[in-house]
Amino acid sequence: MPFALLLDILIAILLIATIAYAVMLNRRLSQLRQDQSELETLANQFNDATLRAEESIHKLTGSADDMKRDVQDTLRKAEALRDDLNFLIERAGVSADKLEEKVRNNRPEPPAYSGKKVKDTVVPPGKDKPQASVQQAEKEDEEEFKPKTDAERELLKALESVR
Image 1 (tube, rainbow, N blue to C red):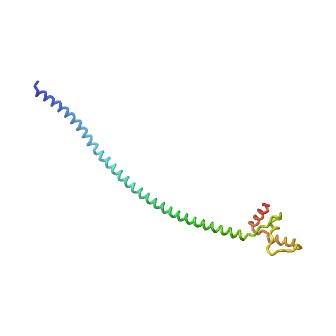
Image 2: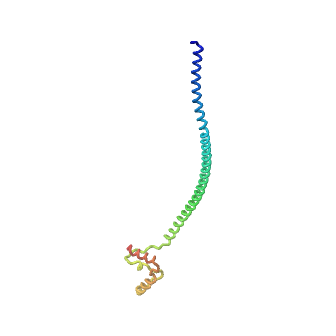
Image 3: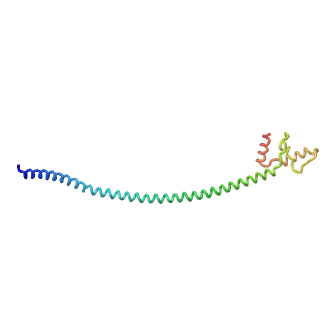
């Protein structure tokens, strides 16, 4: 067999392989062209989703900034109120201390307990009576020192129950 014939057969086999490969490539390219429209649609949808996500991020950022400002305003107001309350508490403490000191300084010494009832130990100022009119003085004292309010009655009961 001549060398040229062998070479022609080899070229024919390579051509058949090339044609087969070209047919396979053509099928894949046509399939890719069909999928290209779907790929474009998918790319457009992805682009739209990306744009919406960016808009949402901007809105969230704006909302977060607004919320941050609101919280800071509320915090500033709360701090101002806290400072005012601390100032008022300090003033109230000082006032209470002064009031307590005045009450202590103006409180008379309690009489020593002698087994008598509270009304027997309380002598109205300027009512030092001689022994002869003690009974009449006691009646007047009882009428004069009768509790007029419920609070006075409760205080007297509490003092008597302590004894």
